[in-house]
Image (cartoon, rainbow, N blue to C red):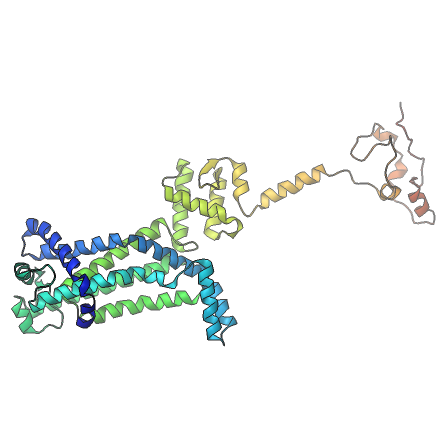
Amino acid sequence: MDTIASLFSFITWPVSWVIVQFHKVYGALFGPDTGWAWGLSIVSLVILIRICLIPLFVKQIKSTRAMQTLQPEMKKIQERYKNDRQRQSEEMMKLYKETGTNPLSSCLPILAQSPFFFALYHVLNGIATGKTIGVINEPLLASARHAHIFGAPLAAKFFSSESQISALGASLTDVRVVTAIMIVLMSASQFYTQRQLMTKNVDTTVKTPFMQQQKMLMYVFPVMFAVFGVNFPVGVLVYWLTTNVWTMGQQMYVIHNNPTPGSKAQAAYLERLSKHITQHGKIRRRSEKVIIKAIVAKGRDRNEFERKFINALNKAGLAAQADGTVTQGTVQAAAQTEEGADTGTATAAAARRQQPKRQTKAQRQSGPKQAGEPTSLEKSDEPQDAKPAAAKQPQKPGSGTRSKAQSGQRKGGPQRPKSPSKK
């Protein structure tokens, strides 16, 4: 660990400078030699770093969702070229390039904060060994060595010897109890963060190997934190526990307000959103408008939860528009629903009402009507009682049926007059 930390010594000076600046502020409130002053300085360093990493976190979310969407296509490529690894890799890279996704984007926040983590480890290790490092001079070094967090020095480790801990002015029992509790909290927060992602913010409609990998990491990461945590100084444990809590809270906010499509979190979010819109008839935030706009643009590709959301608005007499707004009116709502069963039925009925009157077989075979004869769409002026009753009787098969039908004559009765009769 010391060798790895030395590789990031170039960032040690800015990290130590930030800690000292925060220490000046908290030292004026709690005392310069207290654990609160130094501990809160480390916490503030974490918060500052994570605020700077928010754009990378947003990119991580988009990349993770894009990778989830691509899992079916990736699985097809793996099955198609399972005997050709080189072609499989080429097709994968082609898929990433066409969709604009990057598998490494999901690791950007961790990779970006790793230099700060190792630089902080380098600073605290220098405090433990009594060496000045960065902008931490002799007075600040002495102040940091006397600072304890719940009885444990900042530079103490779980496996530190009793002589080392005694030199820092603490007891071995206090150090191991504090470090053990912090390691458990650090592992538990990591497990909860990953479990929250798997149970609430994963598209349940698609079963892919990516989900199995995430499920495996849910158990692997906490174990890794527990194993490596025993070699971290207390100050580094404070850093890592703070960043885990920040990640957990940040993820809870994203899941609550911008869940993954098809996930349980999306079902709960759309249910809350539909209740608010039906009660107040308007949208609260711009982010809600963006989500509604995306749902409308999907059309028939909406998932089950999105269809329920649109149908709930329709039942309330509301319609989601293409620009993300919601307006009154059942006509627009019916146009937005993708099922369209009722609308299709009404349209078909209207079309049937507009169809012309069905002609008889004799009329179809006789060809076009002569000028002056009423068409099937025109109402005849002939009274209903003037039509002979014989016309309603079915035709009997005979040799003269075909010739009479071709000549346009009626069978078995007087012929219809060319002009309407007058009573």
